[in-house]
Image 1 (tube, rainbow, N blue to C red):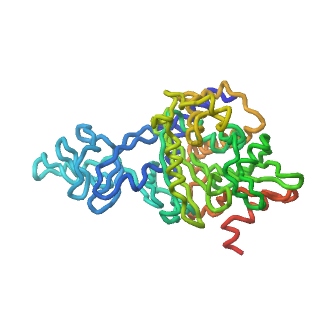
Image 2 (image 1 turned 180 degrees about the vertical axis):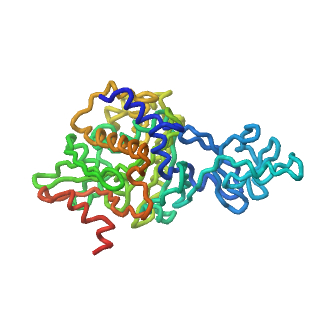
Image 3 (image 1 turned 90 degrees about the horizontal axis):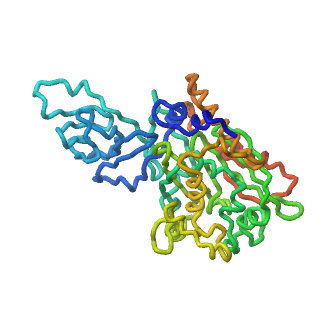
Length: 425
């Protein structure tokens, strides 16, 4: 059980909170590039309990400012994009992308008051179809050189969804390998693609179904935690699946493209406030274009029979007859819906003083410790793990789904596969 004070420390991320300071030490996603094309209206954004406005000026430069005008606190997301910035509709104050006040047209002509005004402004970074921000103090760290952000548009799929619960309980579901044998388990065998290491027409789904007691192992890395779930594959082989927790709020998982070793999925769970968060999905394939129709169908699966979004209010349209025939949860085939149910049903903020962790929760406990280590580092004036200052290299972030002999040391095997080691050979 987690003491109440520790649970509060892990889950509160607003301004001035210890975990909020940790979150602000990293680049965080705030929007998809397609949501803010040139000439579009300013976009209100709420992140880490701060209300902001994201916009592009006439030159296409991105700005992220405090949503309330520092004059009389009118909402700047209604403002005009003109004259090199964002103009408030109330009295015409104009701000550039760095928060500098350019004009105060109602003030006396010789007034220098505008030079004294500096509005809240955060730096942004746009890459791979996503827009990120750094909300911490001082010089922003280097943006990690993730493999997937280099993927061509036809080889990536991006999605955002909002969950009505604290970020941590959904994040913890991402590095919990044991739940795959239950929450997402297919009743019928559908995906027959063989995983690397075997020519059997058997998908990874079937390994989850046939061996529901995975052996879990992990190692701490310079970006977070590398997680190994090991399931049986015949008498002399094992199915090894590698997932990664990436500090402070993201995971790299096998996903659909990783089942046959061609790519993987990255998920961020970014707090809106303490009881709501955004899940960002980034799916990529390094070998071939994605079947976009398949992912569009997955979005459709987020809805119930009448086209309404599955949510706690409609009990995710659970069909108990479907549970007996083709769907373990009775909530359709969308993993996102399954994950939302598991996280949101724990309440707005999970009370971890009531939980009782088991053997397969070893990763949950280790990541919580790592997050608390991040809090301690920031409080000591140090950078937490995975804040990159000298190098943006993250080539040792490996996601894997593979069958191998029982005699193979899975940790050494994965280390030999890292892009960093391959580049050195």
